[in-house]
Length: 533
Image (cartoon, rainbow, N blue to C red; front, top):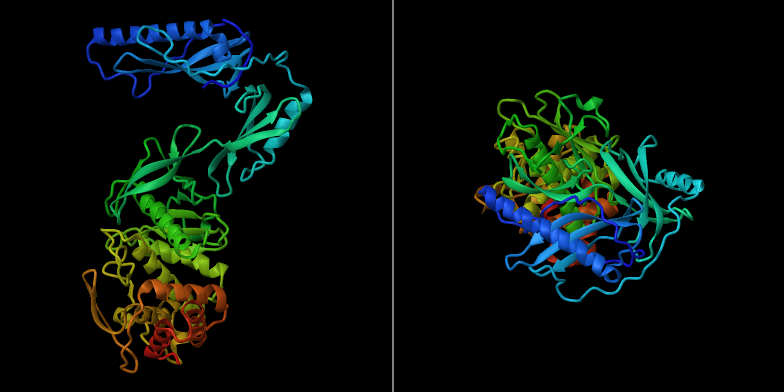
């Protein structure tokens, strides 16, 4: 049904004709194309006549002109002609309507409500109104101060009360250096705000990933018609660092990944298509966000809904990944160039983003036993992101970074199998590199989740011993992770050591399941199993 608009007129504007996807089947013969064109032209001409003949029905009046936006021709001959309109040369927002007519050109049905007729006597607003509109753009959130603006005088009729308004489009940069635009609509007479919205639109792309097969990507359709790796739901973006070192990066470094058709990457390891690593990074960052939100109700790394910047192609043959609080960004390298490919698989992405979660909560110091707990926390939740994703190609396991560092970088059932990590606590654990002292926490997590002894899970055989030869019965990784998360966010502090972690997780288990529960008993038994008493 058309919006109530302006007074009667028979003004006619030149048509801009487009055809919708359902309008006309494909034709190959010139005479058939000519026939379809003539039918469309006839439908448009008749629709204009119907609007003029039934001006009250369509709210069509003096000063108005019509532009054809789309034509749909049904198989039974029914015609649907979509118009937008202008008033004295100004675009009328909310003035669009569709004329439905039979094959003979007569109106189809009588469902149009009679429109109110409102005449505008002036299209020249006060000078102050333009200044008010310009002032509104300064309030645009997420835009830099030097963003450019384009004010346009329009007729605002989207709410049924036509009035003059300024539509000001602001183009600038968002808080992570991404292109960003907002539109502000203000009343041209009073300067009052009517509405504002982003110029970008949500889109769904297809990514051919390196590690997880073909994946769906949440992207953004930009004002220039290209798609960008800006996740409009989770507010993170993915950028190409162009192989500069991690020490040189800030949130606006590199370039935003953009694409014309919203199909990204080629799915190959060691790919020369730079977007392939970006596919994994973008998709796996989303999985990490979703894991925390759906499992713990945590809305982003800092629980503030703010997304991070993710850089791929950092450094030259940099076989690593890291999180930086200073730029609120994650950086991933291209691997060593021979064996290890890009560091963008599920558990690696989950691991690095979890460093941000730890920083925002317990802020475990990155040295000594606290540093080992910090790394263990990232290994634990990186692993849980993999279990949450349940990807058929990157199947869930307790082998950390098994895709990007085959066969694995660390494992949880017996961490010492890497030749460096500790299976059990001792007085010297705090002097190890934090990636190796994390073995105590990782081993606890495996024992609490799956128990001791031999077990085959998803085709991988594990054999987890205990320090004292005891038998531990697991409670499942979801419960173990829930206990660790509550301990991290409620009880641990920056200087918590392994004995403090035992106390923190027992308190968390008590809170979640009760002091006499099997879960509480398993938490205690698993710590005893790694010699934390």
